[in-house]
Image 1 (cartoon, rainbow, N blue to C red):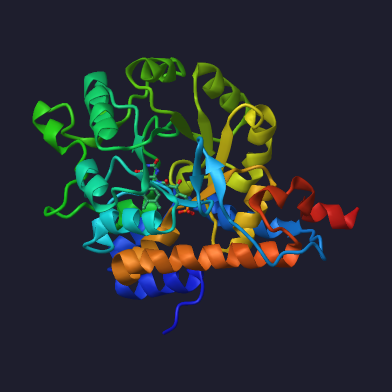
Image 2 (cartoon, rainbow, N blue to C red):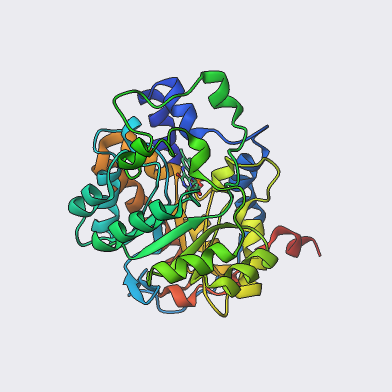
Length: 356
Ligand code: FNR
């Protein structure tokens, strides 16, 4: 079976993975309406091309947090990569490295941050953290990330408590005994503090947490999970260096907006001060194009990278990023954009524009 697009990789993963593991990756919270909207909302936007603009020499490179990326498509943090393939997080990190992109390692990783750093020493790597109840552990983890060459901390703020993921409850999903639920926090388990997931996230946190983070590290803080102008403003006031608009792949609360719907208000509120990125529902190059036109400096993919991993480890993730990069480049050529900068806001409109 030749796999030509991200949706082919999803179908292939469905065949390859056990039902329980595939559904763990695929599923969202509640009735999974937001899960659907993340994808279908992209179809509500149309691309307005600008032809005849000399596009034989094109580049997808851009600058993110002061450094170059060759392609504005990174990998969002997702849990338990070794359920998809033994190469796990290292395979994903190497694939991102080979494209000059960015890999975000989840706290719920089956691979330690040191091993990921060894696997992809020259790749740009960011570490995702939750707001652990125990700040001393957070401090130690961040120091380890700094020592291992991670370049930013991605703070997930949409996780006061676990979302209600009915599919996982029905399937009785559990991390198998041979894998750790967090290789990064494993060494602290003896503490008893992390015996269960409750301690992964402090429901009592507020925006001052970012101020505290800034006192323990010089790494930039990317705040992940913001969906409103108000929260974006508060996050930036507290010291956020960038905002990743996300609804956690629709796994936290059903009826949150699709991320492409939420992106414009966040860009309007803080886009002139900090980078804004987006993830959720990106399945082809035109989705990437639309997100960039609507003000995202970069996009991130969650499940598509997992589908690549399930197909063929690192090589499969490379195929997926390669497909999205090629589709983005194709959209740029046809719409008259030789550079990422030329993908401007006037090139994407909501469908209602055409019924005026
Ligand atoms: C996630 N996501 C996530 N986010 C996070 O901050 N920490 C995490 O550990 C995880 N774990 C996780 C596991 C799985 C299986 C999925 C699918 C998602 C959310 C993730 O970072 C990202 O926001 C979404 O996956 C983006 O949506 P798409 O690209 O999967 O549609």
